[in-house]
Length: 299
Length: 272
Image (cartoon, rainbow over all chains, first blue to last red; front, side, top):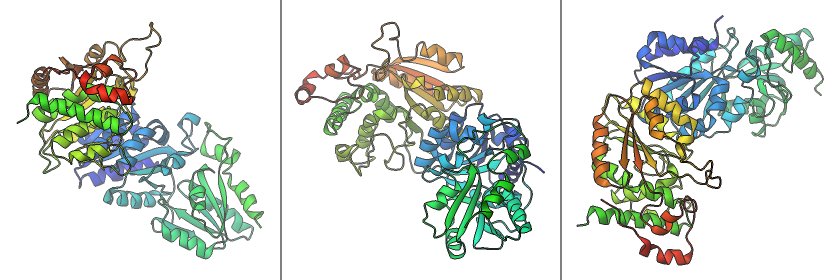
């Protein structure tokens, strides 16, 4: 399986054949984040902006102001944190059509460790007006998200994990039921959708059936998602590769849903750590067995 | 018919009046950058806004001096001069710092220092085929921001000849190290040499001498081989003795009622 960033770079390069206004800026991580695919096919529209994320984001804002369509690639941590003020001024306040592709998002950073973890990236990006956020859980979700992003003019953050993600059986949309609706439902986004499916499997073995929702577009949250949860669920367990504060669970909670919301993300004592996916998953808060036990204890 | 001298003097009066009316503001930097902006708008920039790729861009990266730009835009007819009376008021067309979504003629928002040169570089990349120039007006204090030098490096690497920086080089910043004689130097020492060391072409000019400014800007506009910067040596608070005398107080300050009454008597003619 390939990383989501590579899928993104490859699909974007294909789209660029039909739209000469698309440019890609990269913060010297093209071979890790997928922008290399664009460099290989469209070198004249690939700008290596250097290890200078603040300037890179502002350059993209300037390009968008003269009707180009820039896509900016870096690791999520360096985009969302290092260039936060530039995103605030140049994209959020100015409403510039810049697409930010943050790879290596979340707490599973492989050998990189805590400096490269972006565990509150949703919190900081969702707190900026006008920024849309997509968080695909598979290649199909990603293709759907990119298709929408290519057609709209919203400044957007595309959240991609470092881990390769397997395919999902459903047709991609803004959100969808991966397992049939139940009174108790797991809600997840991005990589954590695959954790939710593991939890679902464990619970099924214990004769507890829960629903599973995959949320691809997390800002703004789709109205139909909120209606559906309100109509069908009494308990939702939000599983996310993000701190419990400020992510999907927090965003759902401000909508005054009629159900109870249980947040299962990283605890605030976790700053990130080197290690492979399974090791980190086993030792920390997103361990499917641990989540499964907590779901079983819900009243 | 008004002369250049009368027009610029009127702009300076509008700046001071507007800042007094709203309770104070950035007298020093607005008055130091006035001549730079006026010469650019009146003598250099292509202002045909009938299509996005027909006009040059100007970004006032030192956005706190925007009252000077607003006064000139009003004189050029972008909006009514009366708008200046509502500068920085609630629901005004004119925000306290430039807002491209509110004010006609503002090519990009600014206010958080150090971002304008990068934005200008992006615009210059997008306008290269159209052969339009992008002028970015920065403060020398602003050049302390690391992002400025990120943009300086990238602009040289991509040889963006239609990117033109101008530094309003008044040698002051808001507070700086003025209290410490050993550290109290210009905001950025050897500024020209720093730009040159990054491969930029550098011009020095008297930032209040309109003929020098005009001649230099014309040369700069013709130079398209790579990025270039004009260091426009200016006086903070230019035009009013009271303000020129106290650049720290008037970086962002206010006038007493007595000073307001006497301010016009303190005017200093500007060389045109």
